[in-house]
Length: 289
Image (cartoon, rainbow, N blue to C red):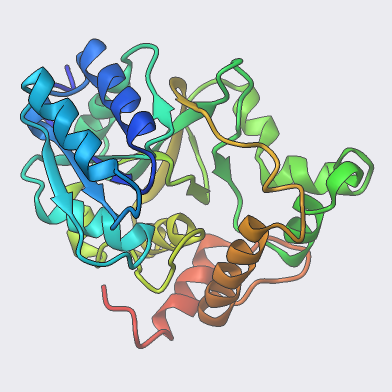
């Protein structure tokens, strides 16, 4: 079934109007959504993003919804603000630095129609050169975090083995939809009713780990997280942040990891099971489902 008319697309913009416009053009070129079903949230960009986005929408006569957030409380808050304006059955969340080269979203929507246990569907993220980003992962361990930030040592055993397990390399090779502990928030689809039921994105996370937390709560609800290797989304993302342990991105990631650890606990070597995370989740009084 076509994705047209079935989903709202949420794009959170921050100092990235050129990327956002490119993303929107790809959505329209591949008939993924009508312009009136696209919602752009500007997270109080200090540049001229709002002016340029308004100019683009006016010059192209596109009825895209633009919400100007009065504050920047992070990515989760931006997504939640966008969902407030949504009225379709499904939500497709996209980073502004993504774009489509084709439209295979019907594969995901057809699966939603036949599988009432499907909670979140992750897209297959790749770099512009086609290299896969392995956007479906296992829940973190301390060993995963160290290995992922080990720079050139990532290619050496045991770091290479740890990373392959975390990135679920063997599951990707099957090239069919598979269950993942979590999928990257760069591009995913969720029913709006499910998103509302689990309490939307956790705004304790300003940036990073909000997608891990969201998927953990989906599993807790008794639903599944699936990744769809055949449904690709280009993610024009810098590759360096995951490799440099003292970068600003790494520091923000560690801060969010601490919040996640405080709520769920992160084991040293063995990835936590979805069941054990669910038990930990029940003990968190601040998060309501």
